[in-house]
Every structure is written in C-alpha cells, then in structure tokens.
Image (cartoon, rainbow, N blue to C red; front, side, top):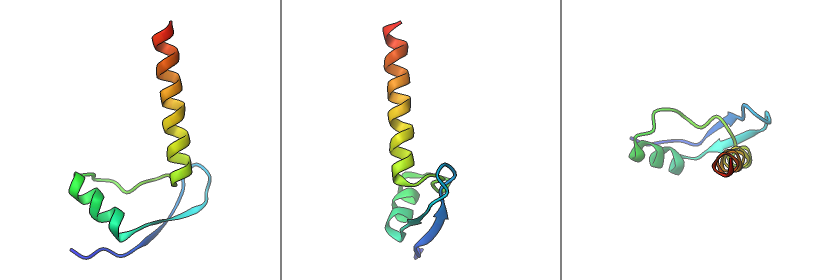
Amino acid sequence: MEFQDKTIKCVDCGLEFTFTARDQAFYQEQGFQNEPKRCKACRDKKKLERQNKDSNQKRN
C-alpha cells in the first residue's frame, strides 16, 4: 500500500501538522489503528505531564 502525506489539525493547539507517508507506514507496521490527534510538541507535552503525574503518585 502506498501512503501519501496527510495534513491533520492538532486537537490540543489547533495547528496543522503533517502525518508523513513514512509515519503512516510505521503506524501500520506497529498495528496502530488510529491516526495521531496531536502534533509532536503536544504529544511530548502530554507525555511529560503523564510522567510527572506518575512520579508524584509513586512518592505518596
């Protein structure tokens, strides 16, 4: 299957980002069913928030 770059709007910041053909092939190889909803910056921010929340819970 040949993929083409797609433009997606981030659900958090509203900016558009490109879901590249290469990324789409990777998602398929990994068995991911859904396209990304967030741009890289927002994904990284969300990941950091989760990590901070997890580390705070472990301290309690």
